[in-house]
Image (tube, rainbow, N blue to C red; front, side):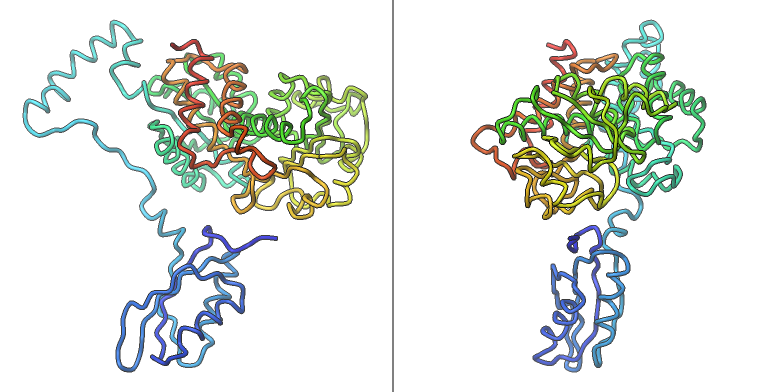
Length: 461
């Protein structure tokens, strides 16, 4: 199922004899081991040799080594250097700070810094709300993590999480003009995280919690929302929920089923799954069946986790029991935010007609999308190499743009649902089909539409 992609892109510099067959020999060697060449450049040429840069996509780091060895095994070919293009992107970090004003002379310096800046400090001391007007607070978000649940890598710590947080900050700027900054905390103690965020919050207009493991993430977000006068948004929960709810609205339009008739299975009841369930309940589906590693969540299961108790109390109206395969029987919708390869086409066949499958585990989904398509009417994944990518980038830049523009002091379900509807509405009726239920992350209309919807829902004008 996986195909070579740009996440494992390498450039291999080789020196080879200048024969007529050299290009074919090199490209054939890469092709035999499954590499996909994206560029082939002659960088130097002599009477007795040519130097060529071969850029290709691989499946993994091991596959990249296989490609390199295939070239190295050719007669009279020398591999001079191998560059990992993903590592090159990250050299020195991906973000920087730039001044918005010119500092050309003493007059500029006197206004931007001392003595003139003292007047601004005094104004904020007299009226703290002026910080939103006169400082970076009006456009700045802290991307906060403890590194305990990074991508699919698990608990790798704050330093190893920094490249992800840098990327998140870059996306904020690219798609919504929001200045975001990584705040990677070297603690996984709930109280210390809450206190640390409290101490820095005066600088920021919003807090984006990221890659903090469940169930601690629930308490951290809840208590920070109680303590702070700025929005606190755990993207792994609510960003995912927004895009899923928007995409599901469109998927149900494709198969002509109302949400109120839809029986939905949500597999995975951690941060993302719980938030999806909570937001979907606002749309009154016929029923939601939650499933985790212990099977269907029901009221008699004896769970002690507060989140699971809430889920059990608010889903599974018939108090069904069993495993994932049992839950799928007769279901209209499957939403997976769990683990790879949990079921196959035979189980999709037991679902209701015109079934919808959102298999969002990354990088390997709960079911091979090609298998799901044998019986499902609409299939979505979290991957970029299949149609209907459910990606948080569709949500969080616009959400925070709207919150900042409204100078919001909190965030509500009404704002989240407004964002979901805005994403869905970008895909108008003429473009909507089974392979296009959400817009591209590069669609320039998305972030402004989401921002405007959130701003209005927050009471902005």
